[in-house]
Image 1: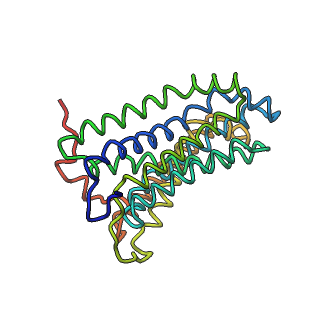
Image 2: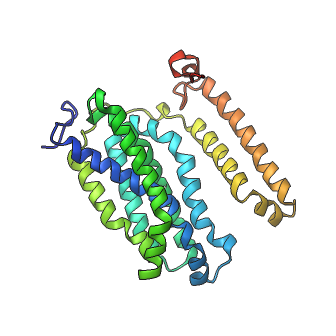
Image 3: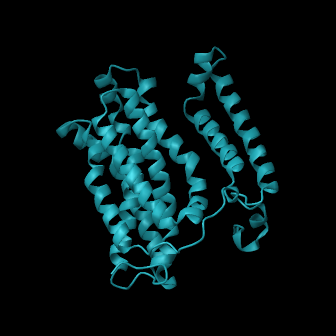
Amino acid sequence: MTPTAAEPATRASIPWALTGLSLSMLLSSLGVSIANVALPTLADSFEATFQQVQWIVLAFLLASTTLIVTVGRLGDLTGRRRLLLLGISVFTTASLVAGLAPTLWLLITARAAQGLGAAVMMALTMAFVGDIVPKARTASAMGLLGTTSAIGTALGPSLGGVLIGTFGWRTIFLINLPLGLLTFTLTIKHLPADHSRPAMPARRFDNAGTAALAGTLAAYALAMTVGGDIGGALGFGRSAGVVGLLVVAVAGLATFVRIETRAASPLVRPAAFHDRTLRPVWP
């Protein structure tokens, strides 16, 4: 029987729920690393330069990086199980589009959508642990998910190489279809349903803070990856491109902090940093 909002996951459903969460973590981490090994093949297939095909990886990373911090708040407003199911659906559908993409730019767009779905999957998978396992087993469940994430990251290049060499590059994306469907099925059957709650007004979501944080993370990620290329393309020099993006990131961070101190429902509550229980313990 599927758990309800008032009924936590039953003992019999816990292994299946953890399996679904583990697959969710595996898919999202696998999506990060599996495409790296395919870039030379994709450059040949689409007759593109390496600077162009590297956006297949960057689009995924930028999309997942800019969204992952806001997912928890979105889950509070819309329901975590509902949002996780949406993330799995987006990731799986985007994998199908990526596997069938006839053009490079459609593939890059699909990878960005994959990154959005992966951000939801990575963030909410960890958030669900406390809802489905007893408190005494929380640490072991978190360790399982962390191990699964590491396995996905390590498995990506080798699995990608085997699939490309045997079946072609499209299979590195199409392999997500059966795994995504299985993950969706386990999630909808075995994770606790969302608590029913009255509709939240739009003002409860920190739109300004979300936009500032997304811009900050995007500028920093671009500075660390293709900042030099952007500066060179604009005629400012490679170093100037990196420095310029870092300046934008610092300004964005300052703007984000200012917004959060004044927001009625901040994305990150500044007062939380004064809580002694949340501070790191140094040896």
